[in-house]
Length: 402
Ligand code: EZ4
Ligand code: CO
Image 1: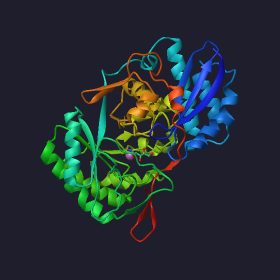
Image 2: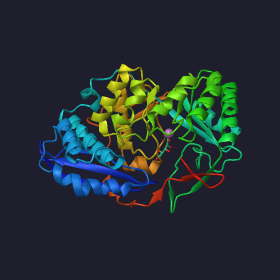
Image 3: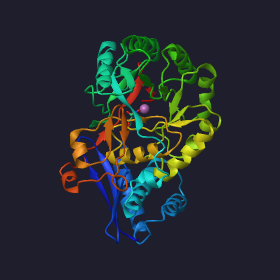
């Protein structure tokens, strides 16, 4: 089953997406998401200029061999551009493999370990009251887990406060937006927000919060401790994780569960975090961490250490990545939760899919392969539109993590 054609489709139905499409001699095709928010064209070029020419003539069924060929064969290992490209190839090959066997992908990954996949939605607001209202909407829609973010007085553009209550999109056209950051008001505000949310909704709904890499380990430890009475499902990205050992400080001080890994691209980025049991949830994704094949290896290591999966699922992960995530989530034993930010209707139309949401959970559907496709004609109506993620500065102007 030789690969005879490969192409990269860059489109912007509301936001930018990079999609790889591979076609075999039997006329089957598979797709993979290769979107790297704010750096899209680097991956598009990596694929078109350096990867697709090597794939032509290869057997589409040799998924692991192709992964190793692209990873070891590049000589230059790891990194978000390389791994997003390899991830897209891997997903497209799994998609083809499922179609060739007329089976939904999860059936090739060991079958379903559960009936459906618990997801969490995003409640955000300009104030505590707004966030409570947004959370109530998610409860009404049937969500059983909600991430809550709110604007904080004294912080311009706090992370996670979107343009609408049901849609959050941080990338902006033109030059990057500059946000302002101040740790002290944030640390005072967050416990009050969760105290209020527990008062309004009780303990029957899971609550999550994303710090977005803005605290030092000791500040994160303090926040985790102050949130203990509100029993969060997780506290996400409490501190940057290039230094994995920094999480020891957080772990030492708090029993609030910790999630990290949306920016990781290989198992080596979380090896110490997992082996020392410094985290509870690993957020690596099909798109940014080398595809379904590599994500399964991360999950297997995590399973040994009581770490569960909690894959990133923001709007910049296309419906192709979402489908891959859901097949993975349904199959691995140590699944924890899946992030699900709704895409716009425009995006959903460009990527028709079999997955569906019901009662706070999702299922990838029974269509063969990933169960998602790209409408190329429609995609062509939405040309690439450059956009960047914001940058962040402390009140004195120092660049900070966004
Ligand atoms: O900032 O996907 O948990 N979700 C997040 C996201 C990320 C964006 C970056 O492209 O942190 O909103
Ligand atoms: Co996050």
